[in-house]
Image 1 (cartoon, rainbow, N blue to C red):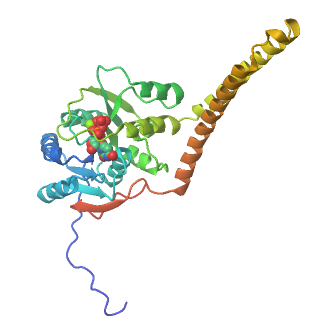
Image 2: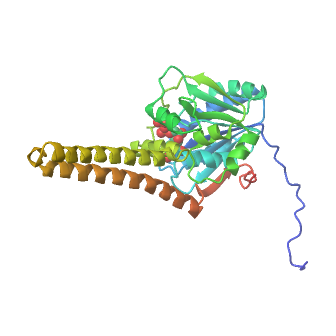
Image 3: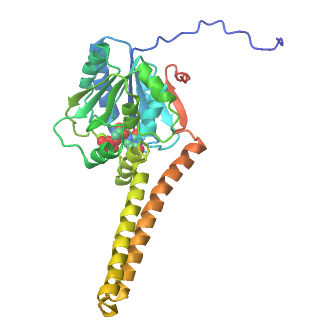
Length: 327
Ligand code: UDP
Ligand code: MG
């Protein structure tokens, strides 16, 4: 060993005990509500009398959410922050939270307090009772169309109106993290994983502060992800569509020929409208099918690039350098 190498550190390294419970919250422009979220989460965790950590993921907010997380982490050693380098979207932020949570059980809830933290003790009770996945579902509302389409087309069913508000046991978190997919629809992946799952109903509260961050485009994108990432049924659909069009075209051709043979040339409807309609329908069907194939090809391309689903800019809080090891 060269003599000028630094002497081995003599200060005892403080080994952080792994917390029992990790609470993860993705935050996008949630500065106004974070203090209240922290207050309510702390009250709940203290009442549970177990070791815990709160992992706040800043998904590239523009309103100073990152600074607010830093302030909370300085004041409370239970708080850790994962600040992403830009806005990667809710699902990526949740994935980042799972990657950085160290607890034996990991609860994810929205930062806007629409998911009542007071439900967490019930999650923990079910978990201690032997459940691996405890998810909350919204009570008393009819499942949205998106869910019904998903469950109709896909083999992996998502419980109706399951929210992104759930507790996962460590072994489920590790299984989830070991899935190689980059474009993540976490709700579907959790359903796909299986394990012992139980749902508990909850009533969704109003947003505490700020405005909904999800745009219509993001909602559409997630609905598409929910079906296309879990089913190839739309590909099959394009085949059916093609077959039906062929059949209709065949029938029409038979009708024309029949008329020509049995009634005579004059009875044939003038060709122009029929021609245009046929061309339009065929063109439309072809474009739809091509678009469907393109969606899958695009997704394959995205996955093949193997880019990470998020990039971390900075970690704040105690033991900030450590990420849970990849399973
Ligand atoms: N969120 C995020 N990144 C985004 C959009 C949303 O991390 O790009 C977070 C947001 O801060 C909130 C949660 O995801 O904690 C749910 O978002 P929102 O309340 O806008 O969705 P909604 O309640 O309308 O489903
Ligand atoms: Mg919300």
